[in-house]
Image 1 (cartoon, rainbow, N blue to C red):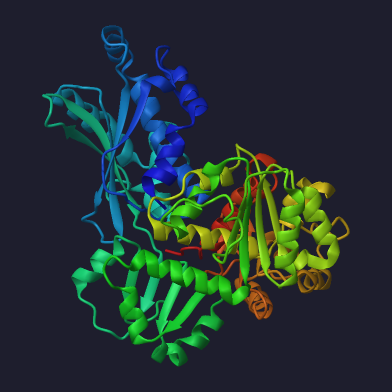
Image 2 (spheres, rainbow, N blue to C red; image 1 turned 90 degrees about the vertical axis):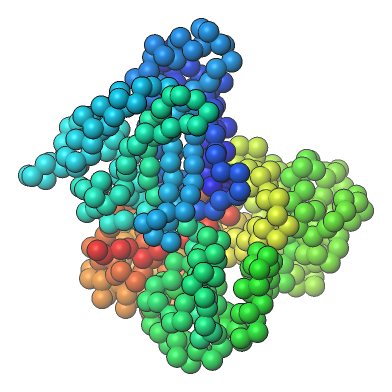
Length: 563
């Protein structure tokens, strides 16, 4: 994920959140008096474990630093604002390669509250360090009732590193969270800062017999490209490229470990791999592979119906050097865009023509002005060829369409991932989601190729044959199933769960185990696991409903670490 655009900017733009944080700690502060500054000028990408939860973990650290800075510097802030009404409380975020590991970034966050060096040293050595040394729990395993904000920061920082829970008891020794003194060259003052680590992105793993220089490996890793000479037991990268000559060696291992490897797997020859690794060509190559994966599944068109031309500008950047002309609505670049809502008959004619030619349509519409057309085409027998999702100005999808990358190839990657999200059929077998979804909403989700069982399928007392028949009927690509359902069906051990998963994976790309209570005991370490929170977030709540984000979360689900 882009650190600034995808993570920091949404936090900065959440005025309600910032106002709430500031007003609770300082009467003179509000969102207009807060400045979140990303120091690094070059674009930085980070790896976020758990997707939605990982972003919230970063926000947890940022919020605690902001809240504590406002709380413990009331007089300083009041004095600064009285002297200069344009003064703002600033948090500066810096990102540099970590010396701890080539897989990590060092993230430093420091304020602009100028202090004497001795005072900061005293605060660190006499307050913060002792709290961190005490850990989270006492000798009897009870939670220590002190420094709650600092504890939350430690837990969030450990989560962002993907560290086992046991490491948070010794956050200093494990380099999880470290307070430090920041000296700005431009002034005589000193500032309080906190340092923690985040993962570098993991986008592509290439397994090849080619000899690669270590210096090249390090350069590629900063971009999320990992090159190895053998296939690891687990691959968290969304794309896996294996040299063709190694196919026979690894193909069976991949089949025997469902969930340990991504769904996007390619076998390529030496020249293909060399082309992929050419300087300044990697984003373009990733876009080609994303397109290849989707094209194996169907021949799609992305259809965007909107009143706002801004929402389709990323398509211009992805495929054109010049502006799209109004009559370029239908072309051979796998997308259609429509601005004038009154031309319903024209849109119906175009969509019908594409459906008759066996194309698959991924339709994204601002509000539901075309719903009657979609219903009609659906009833005409085209239900298997249509994905339809309406979105509002407050939805996560709206943010994606308005925050497209500046890089042409990154736009293409986004384009094909938007289509993939529409193509993938996702089944959710969870009694909490089932009970929260109303009958009319179930139809909306079905348009989005999200399947939640009807009322007659009992997930509280599940019948295995009934569930298997439901899977067989809907033919999903991905199944997210509550660990409790597997337990009630008699699959109580990791071995039994794995056996069930393997038996279903002949026709399913991925099975993800879901739970709301942390790590279930019956989940084997090779099966991807995901908290129920993001699934509920992107399916149950209409304002946040987004197939793209749901697919991203599920595809990012990884095995549980046992360390």
